[in-house]
Picture (tube, rainbow, N blue to C red):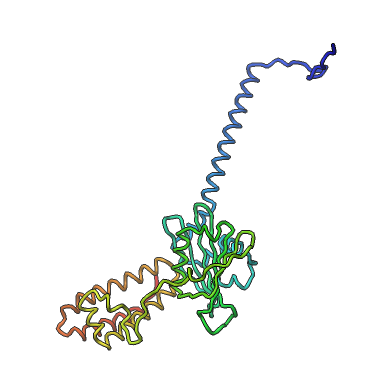
Amino acid sequence: MSTQPDPKGPDFVQRPTSPGHVKSLAVLMRLAVLLTVVGLSNSMALAQGRASWALTFSGQSNEQFFNSNAWHLIAADLHIAENSDRMLAFVGPPGPVFTSQKRYVWSTSCQAHNCDYKGFFWIDARTGKSLSATSELPTLGAADPEDRVLTLGSVTLTSSSIPSSAMDALRKWITRNDLRFTAAQFIGRDGSVTQLDETLYQPTPAFVPPPGGPGFDCSKAKNAIETDVCHDSTLAALDLRLQTLYGQIEGGLATVGQIAHLKDLQHSWLRRRDQKCAVAVQRRRCLEEAYSEQYQQLENWVPR
């Protein structure tokens, strides 16, 4: 019968274990467990806050926003070089950074001077998932502004998993710029291109003022003042002139706060116009003066 070798070897010596040694081992084990828990907690916090940087730009101009991590994410989403001409869509005039639910952040931009390229970027600050988009003419400087191609891209989303918040923001951008696409595509994480139904990415129908004004829908006139404006060609033209100026100013504002200030200014004027002219003996003259004064005020208004 053979004898099995001692697995510990012939030179093994059983060392006595002192109470102090056991205590030290126990402390080290507890420390290891603690470090593991802390590490996991930090990892979870990092995962949850991986795009919290985006929230720091809430309500600000997008000049710095597009110079931050957003620039790298956009290039990655669209699979283009960071010095590509297509990135010009994100270096145009400053615009506001929007936030909803203290979680979703998005902004838009336009190539300086001619706007051949328009850009859109949305990010979920909680998960880090992002969606980038460009609207461009098939040929730069093409005469027909409606002949545009929409390109969506994401390394964290698929064409069928775009969140509702991202779609809502995307539609606002499309409608605000009255973008009409003849083609649409989605670039996936691996660079593969999926053709999309461009009819799903068209602007929401909006009221178009008649050439002679007014700037609002007369079928929805809310009071006698608006009815008078609708029935008087001079007042209708004054209303359209003011509405056009308002839209030009709003489109050039750089922050959400400036837009809110402009809206408050206009709403306050509308209330004063209705209250004052409703009881005026010469209502038409009152309205003409009101429109003239507000036009001058908007022309000289300085965003704060």
